[in-house]
Image 1 (cartoon, rainbow, N blue to C red):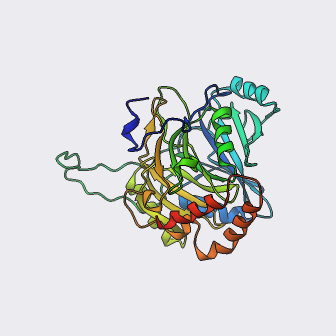
Image 2: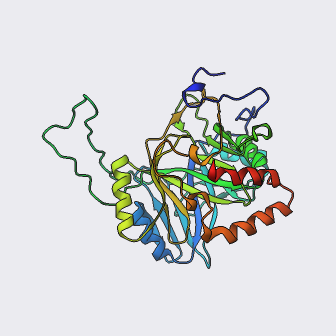
Image 3: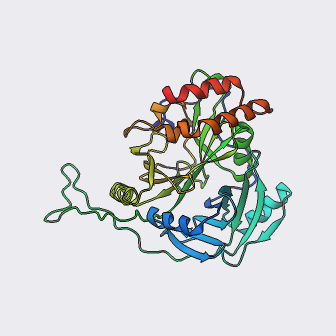
Length: 372
């Protein structure tokens, strides 16, 4: 086991627990590429997106592509449709050879992506029923000017002299898509699918209070890029009563950009879900917001970077364990807000009637999380 293990977790894995990686994955993806949504009102969507800090890469009457300042493809692809829904996730392969290899081994066809994006895709579906595209050769958008970071005086390090600190209250300029969080009724099968098909590896496992013996119910999963450090998690997966999108996260420059950008959003009537704070798993500075259709999105900065030598950490899944500092976790973020109670109750009853991993004992453990 790696000597780096204890850098991020006080609780190492035990003999016989999930190793957090596949022995012989089909391929190893390089990164997350983009997320796809359908929305009825792209004008309303674009207004929020610009206030949140996205740049528009493509706008037609029926499609909207949002990007960050980093070079590469879009972060989010939105298409006009009668109702709002999350459509799926795209991951970037190292090259088209990996796309062809995955297609052959998974028994799935490949297709050329639209001219507006370019490249090749193999289209899969994970065990939760969520579409997963693995892409390569996508047209590379040029880099855009980034938001300038602040110059800090830290302790005895005095780097700012005869100058003031005046971060502008403007949208926090998005740099890139960092991760997506999904919920699954078939958590273990879905976790293993991502590890085996996409070669991803687990950074941290969470288990429900008093249920470590039954295995984890949430995992923070990163790309395996060998000795090249990558984000602590590109995908997070949690057991729950639905197969659905939970939130997505977009990197900004620093705390000032995140905080001033939040003030800009609040002044325009947008709703903060939870923040500002710093997470434990991943260490990111965070600030969560609801878009006009109710989807949860996150600004983040200063996240952990791991190479492939770091083994999984283990911790109980508890509301108090979601941040190192910041306001108490909100009911809206946890999904226990009274406004969503009826829909969540229907989701729970439906899940309990089906054959999956979400059983009564798991439900009891999950109900303990908000007060733990």
